[in-house]
Every structure is written in C-alpha cells, then in structure tokens.
Amino acid sequence: MSYLDPKTLTLIGIPGLEHVQFWIGFSFFVVCLVALLGNTVLLIIIPAERSLHQPMYIFLAVLAATDVGLCVAIAPKMLAIFWFGPSPWPLMLA
Image (tube, rainbow, N blue to C red):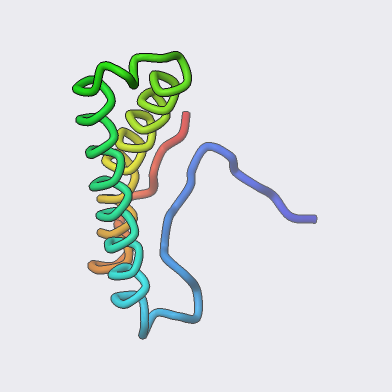
C-alpha cells in the first residue's frame, strides 16, 4: 500500500534524460518564444485594426492574453529546472 502526500510537489525534470535536459529546455524555450511573439503580434493588431473589433476577434485576443500570461508564469520555472537542475525546496501546494 503506497501513501501519497498531496501537500507537496517536487519538479525534478525528466527522469532518465538528465544528459539531454539542456536541449529539451532549449526546444521549450524556442516554442515559448514563438508563442509569445505570435500572441503579442495578435494583441497589437486586434486593437489597432478597426475591422477586427468583432466578438470573435476579441475572444481571440482574450485567448492570446491568457496564453501570454501562462507562458510568462510557467516557462521561467520550467526552464530553470531543465537548465539549472531541480530546486532544493519543494513547491508547497497547501
């Protein structure tokens, strides 16, 4: 019988692939950079172009803003784990 302690979560990377984690992190960095660039372009174009002031494009802008926010919040921690190793302190959930 195993015991799971749901109050702590430790991010350690990908087990078994420690020797290539720098390159895995680099690919995540490139994907995140492309996503940030594309969503930022959308967030600049939609308010600037009058013909795009329709509900569908406003919803697209909200999705782009959400994607930018999540990428800015999650990517630095993920890249720090891949490039510099796991943090010695666990992430507390409670």
